[in-house]
Image (cartoon, rainbow, N blue to C red):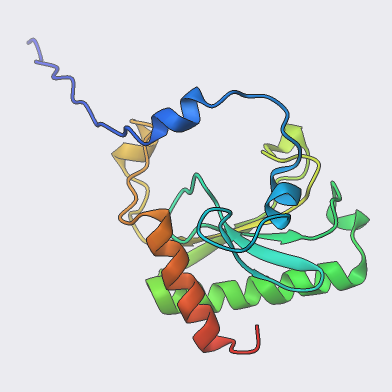
Length: 171
């Protein structure tokens, strides 16, 4: 019995910018972002003395955030106690904000420390926090190696920034 196999096409033209960007060393992504004003372009939602929160430009899910120390260090153990404490506080706040905005079923929180562990920015340690829903991994991501995000990064930025200000007005 022969099966008919149809090839389906999913157009994601916004990915071409990423594919075509020259892959040259332009310094640390996080340190570069810190030199710019906070806005949807650099994706920094808020800054504290020792750490900051920003959106992931290539998210796995809507609301994919990163909590980053201001100090450019490769490992958690290299950070000052103040930075580690502030990062944990920001992770807790991020969980609460993401819960309020997206009502996820759960969260993934983690850090990839070093290139061998999958760190995209191996010299500047950071944590990822991702909202998760039952069934959010489907054929698109597992077979098609494609993510479907229901909103633009600018919308995610504005929703999270507004809610963070409401929940943590002194931020």
